[in-house]
Image (tube, rainbow, N blue to C red; front, side, top):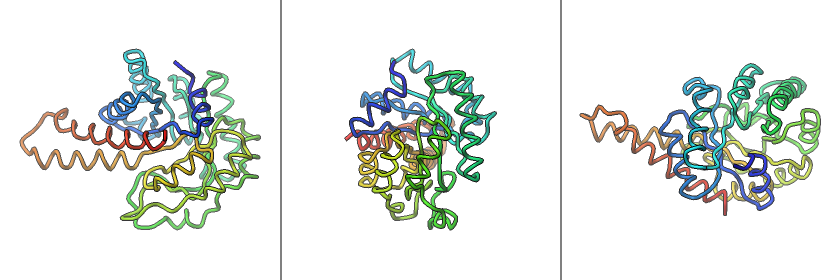
Length: 285
């Protein structure tokens, strides 16, 4: 199987993006994996610290390993939004393919220091692991929002100069900048437009694959433009969670006498698979 670095670099050269999808349950994982297999595309499974707590760090790593062995599928595992060195170490030691050292809530110097620690430990254990750094405030969690959070609206976007200095100082393989993107989705309207010219400028300044967080709720046109501008990985979480939640609610309402969890969760798996397939097609136009 190809290294994740080679998969991401290839996507970047070809103006495509690798889809990164967060999962919190086995049926979500199967839905994402089935969508990617059906399209014969590589995929990254993301698990945040909360999702790793629910699934188990070593347990989700073992599930991904078993999928690879059984199907030969190019499916990779990322420790998403990792905010402590101990949490990063646990993921690296479990065999994850990538880790996001998320120091975006810290002062810049502290973000650099933390990210450098994660890079040093990760590369000492596995030179092929990808370490991602994050700059700028784009919100937290997967929520339906009535408006852009005030702290996000007031935050400065990442500049090419700051991005270049951060990459040089930390040695990261990937960078997630703040370019107008937002975690969560706004009610009844698309998320704010991305600053595509800023994406282009940051991409040129750092000469590394960029990662677009907040892929949920962002217009297809903006996502496609960001990919062409240098975003080689796109994260999707909230849209998957909403699809899963809505399908489960409907399954319970339509089957009040059913008690078998696997029957009630099957529509949720299918809903996740449908959203994932549509996103993968967008990312690989």
